[in-house]
Length: 102
Image (cartoon, rainbow, N blue to C red; front, top):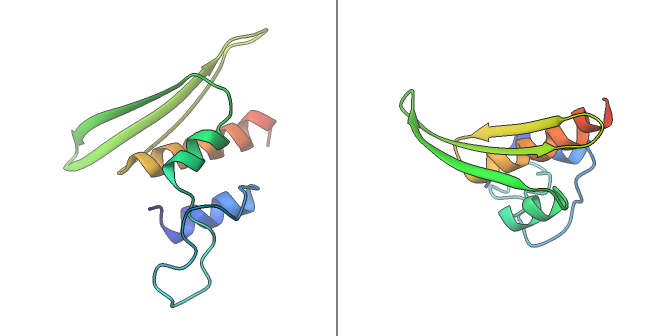
């Protein structure tokens, strides 16, 4: 599951706020929707995604998710994190902010 700050960034960037994921794991404060890994992958669209477990780096497990797009210009987007969910959520943010020229 992704943390509050990343869930809020997804919400602010337009990620759908309904599905099979979670809304409020603690009950302490309003929590933006935390999508499942499946929902994150599907939301990235019809792209060739690479997800890699980079192993232990600097004492922490690290996951890496990336997409390369070829057309008139080559585009590359990526995200990383301590879990695969975080890496793919950050990849979605890259695709939906940097990919739209924001």
